Length: 338
Length: 294
Ligand SMILES: Nc1ncnc2c1ncn2[C@@H]1O[C@H](COP(=O)(O)OP(=O)(O)OP(=O)(O)O)[C@@H](O)[C@H]1O
Ligand SMILES: [Mg+2]
Image (tube, rainbow over all chains, first blue to last red; front, side, top):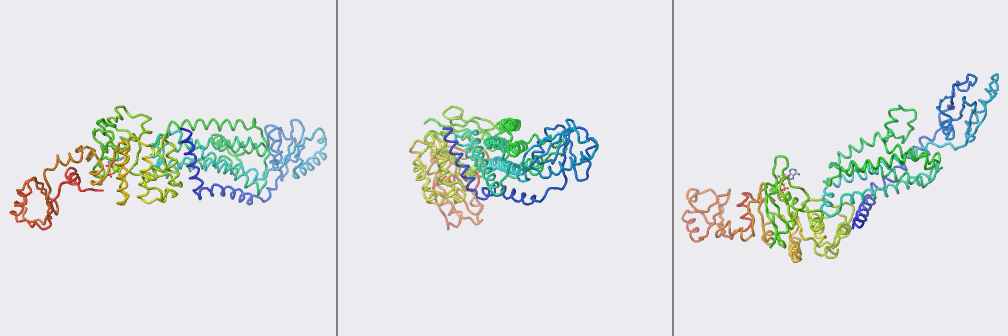
């Protein structure tokens, strides 16, 4: 019985979505256009600086770090610097603690800096001694490679929050909820069907955006699709649950619209959709840890750009799962038909 | 006949307004019960409390002598005075959706036939006309094969043909032993359909009984009605059972001969005089002191 009701509600909601052509196409086309537009806008060259990471106190004999064209970036440990080197976020790495340097063989800029570095060492008396080379490999992610998970996350956020939150508030306002309340359908069953329909919809639109942008841009995907799918499902569930919290009581569409915008704006700004939060004030980074979007994007980038495995993104997944449970509990406690 | 539903001393307050103010009555099983009253009388508020949709501020609702529970919703059909229908799905899909909510729903063909929906099955809910929509809402109320249906102004906005179809429909579901509770602003409809009528105003029941018994109780004889231009008010004021209105006078009498003679004696112009048996409309106006405000 419950299952029969669920299936019918699921079907009705999904048809409603597919037939609402405006929203339907907008959800599909907008993110693709956004990615393509930004990819085009940012396709120009990088800034001309060489970025050189280092660990330990700079040795005055390594004049490289003092050069005008070089931005020296200190790192707390070699590991994080090497990861960035692999991603071409820095061009070269010097470890003063172990007297080593590292270069990404796939980076022409990196190879150039190496020549410069070795030449400088050779020129300085006694300096050449002892520095050993490590090399890493890794393709340089383009901005779009980095952007795609962000935009998919953003689309997920809007589609989940508004598709569930806003729609249920509208149902409440125009009396559709009251009509359902007058039937034997349990609130939990109704809400689950709404959420399930939206989960499938968002999953499919995300897959479409992924495939659509990939067809044009051929972006980087180094990890496992299965892990990405798992992370995406968790991310969507989390955002839908957040949407349900807002949908539980509100009865005015204008109010719902305003509140949802107020909530989504800081998430978009602070979750690193369009630009990295690295280097922004610590307080902002701390706040952003509370947002589901941050964890989805971070996890997706790790999987896609670094080929991270399940263990590496487990913390992100755990936060998403935890937040989902919290949001669902709040929504269930607050929900009212009318 | 035992009562299928009873409300006892029910009150509903909205802030300082008592929309329903200490109302008690029973609905006999298998009957058609009509709730009449001017706009804002508290009909919708009362019926929604009976439906279990809203909870009363005070008093209680009993279904077969038990407080209503979770299973109640599966046994009743409800048509609200105004509700939206899910958007972007068709009439047929909506019927299927609501059918899925019940264990043994009424067969779709029967619903379609009873509510004359055959022509609009493929139409999007958003594109229904007022009357089509009304029929659709009625269909949702009878899908569950209810023991009890609640209809809040079911015929408002229907054309005369659809209204007659509706009356037939009520007769058919009454034949299934379904109890009907309805509100209406149409007195002819109430007279025709209802076995029992409650007239309410300002949250209180003014009177409650079968239509015939109510008329019997409140009207003796017949009503004489006469256009009135303001003349001879002194001569008229002595007449028994006289009610003055802005542009007419009404005389209720058991002795028609004598009253007509008295009117002649008062030298009133009898052009336009009419005599009729009092009906529910007269009763309604008498009790609520209002012309119908529908
Ligand atoms: N939710 C509410 N909040 C405040 N007042 C309300 C609410 N619902 C109804 N009322 C008031 O209660 C009174 C009774 O309303 P109700 O809807 O029951 O009238 P009704 O008899 O159904 O009228 P109508 O014939 O116009 O449908 C009205 O004065 C109305 O303004
Ligand atoms: Mg009403």
